[in-house]
Amino acid sequence: MTKRTVLYPVHQELGAKIIPFAGYEMPVRYSGDKAEHLAVRNNAGIFDVSHMGEFIIKGPRALELIQKITTNDASLLHHGKAQYSCFPNLTGGIVDDCIVYYIRDNEYMIVVNASNIEKDWNWIVENNKGIGAELLDISEETSLIAVSGPKAEAIVQKLTDFDLSGLGTYFFHKGTYNGAEKSLVATTGYTGERTFEIFLYNEHALRTWNDLMEIGQEYGMIPTGLGCRDTLRLEMGYMLYGNDINDETSPLEAGLGWITKLNKGDFNGSDLLKKQKAEGLKRKLVGFRMVENGIPRHDYEVAFEGNVVGKVTSGSISPILNIGIGMAYVPTELSKPGSLIDIMIRNKPVKAEVVKTPFIQK
Image (tube, rainbow, N blue to C red; front, side, top):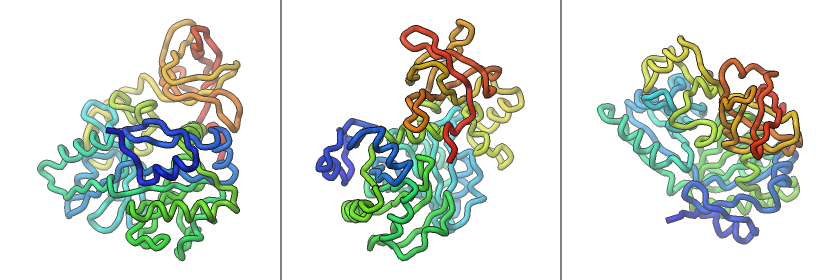
């Protein structure tokens, strides 16, 4: 059965186009993808991302479990800090990507993708055997509102006495927000703009959304859906699980070596990843921009000198650059910026150039 977030009635009232996504009925757009995209880049947008999953891991062996199941080094975290990470599997692929939050000594929160909540939970439970950390799935009782854009901080600040300007990227403040106790406001986001993700119990979500919407009017903030969230993240070269990374893609191939700490000690799949690094990668995830007119789409073939060498993992028109951009896995020898490849659009090769990401500078 398809689920709905507690903010579903609001999206209906706002006239959003609702689509099934990750087991939920979610707003894909309100006014239009491009208008919403530009609002986030220039002013602010507000997203309902309550479909995401939240797990609590606590107890004296919580860190031991997290170190086993993630690639990043969670021992470097301290109170109020978060880190991007991923769950490696035992065959060199990725179970999911995630964000780990250090709540307090021996207590962490892990946020996972909505489509993988059950899969990730089962993976963590299986890996917890013999460790015995305390696990809590708080996804169903937690709402998540994201405000993103150059004016996001001014808007979110109006509902709290805590000085948000002191929060660097990937930090958070836990406490009372807009009268809601035990809330968490984090500077984690998926757009490349200054973003505040507000985790709060479901009963406070509607009031907080409405209060933020009212405040946001004077700043040009509008409600924004999953459509523009996808083009915003693509312009930054941020990966989407199920498209750019999955159970068959290595974090090293995906360019996630920076969150894969092979010297932190053993973790799931670490021997395979060390071997892969030593032997050299056969393929890499790259960004590309169209040289000729064309819109690249997920699963379009990538060719070089008439031979298929890969597939597009994500692709669209960049609303800022107004050209086609995308990501794809290509042989390592074609991964250098400046390499020319062909994207097969309607069975015709259309020229593209491998470029460094992000596609736009922030």
